[in-house]
Image: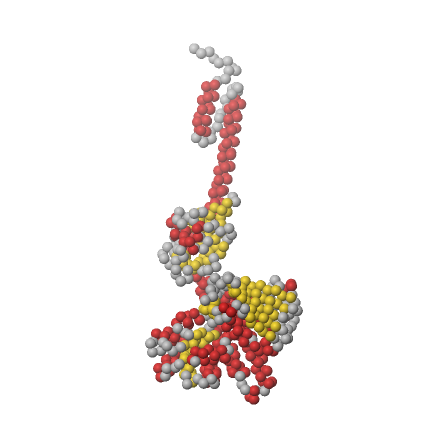
Length: 120
Length: 438
């Protein structure tokens, strides 16, 4: 079963991701910060990372994305940026995100569909 | 021995001796002095008197003229003082773009003294930079290129930076107008000001808006997904009544989300700096299909038939360079209107077309239509025609304003046909050049 790592500080949202994605056969691990995200990636490489941008401390999501893409160990893990900021898509894609989703403007079904396509 | 002169002969020599010095002074512009008339009147007396009168009149006229000159001089000094003291920078260029005047504020702003600036080309003196620090080449400088004298005052909309004598730069807002003298254009006046403070405020405002939108979207987004999951619950777990209530919650929530998007867009569009666009390759057919799918609840509630036609197959799945979020907003607003104002059992037809220069989207509905007297106003902010205000159909009057603002920004066109009680068809065309189909 494929492992999806969710880096999102909103716990309610973490639960929603878990419910939706576990429901279609993925294993989901949720962490609330960049630091814990880094640890989780080391412990077990996920098949996909869902990354929020606004994490404790500011727009840390991008810092982590940059580090992941620079590290040969992790640069091939696909990262989908999931955020409620609507003006950062170009930045996110330039750093290496494979997709950019504005949460409130996208249905859960669409998110799940995109993930399924990616990990097929 | 000369005999005494008869009493009535003219003593010419004396008169000549009187007049010659007077004429000598007059020849060099000195009209002072008076002619003393002799006691003995003779034939010359009228001439002497006439010349004396002439001297007096000339002196009077010269005094008047001097007084006018003095007043003019004072006026000129006052006007120059006025120009110099204007709070904004003012520079006047001649038809070759050479500085003929620079006021005190201008000197302060650009760091050059007027005496250093006069005689030089303005565009040599003050380099222009864009936001990123790139120097704007001579032929691309707005208004100043080729010293084209504008026929009307033009205000720069983009923020450019003037580079001072010391190499530091400041963001400048400029107004350029022609100098017209005796019916001819004789130069350019550039009024410029340092807008560093305004820019800071605008940047703060912009950031505040983004953060506010983000904060609003967070609970709205969570609710949306929670309800998405709820709506998928199996029938046994949810009674029809509960399902119906959840649908209502969902619709309201989607409305809120749309509203946040619209208000954010409007705030950005009406700010004086251009709204930031995230231009990425966007598959238009996907966006349109997604929006239709999102609206399926409303479509079903009114028993509408929605058709999306793409007669030119090459458009299916084709990419277009455009801001996907903003394009989606445009489609959402137009489709939402086509659905909201439609009659029960009606139709919505969306067509995607292309011509060599444009990509066009038509959205036709069989709804309430727009009354003739409202047609000129429906793109205005907060405007809703009377025939819908009276109904219970919700709306803010912002949707079409946002739509048109984006389309204008993209260099496109939007227009419509509509007949009350029959329906409306909206047409949007976007130029291909800036948004090339890949």
